[in-house]
Image (tube, rainbow, N blue to C red; front, side):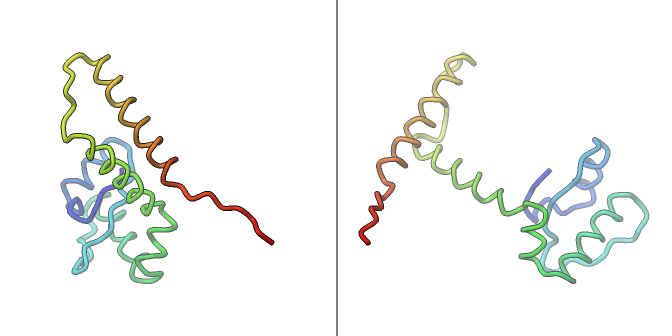
Length: 119
């Protein structure tokens, strides 16, 4: 599970581990090591050690955390066509999302510069 620093809590880490997952959440700026009394604390303290030793940017690159921002940017583009889905039927909701994605792809294609080699 990938989430932002707001989900750096014992409860969230415990829920992810209980479901057999791995939490990829950056440690808060003022984060301190947790007492090692549960598996959630062990995993989180290891993340804390890694970010302090290698740096936050390297940790994000190694864990793939940076890919999250690309997804958030695309979802923001999707919301530009309307905050809500108008359809109530699940099939129509799917069609509505497909139409929005097709529009975004078309706009991106129109806005992409055409590069021509001169030399």
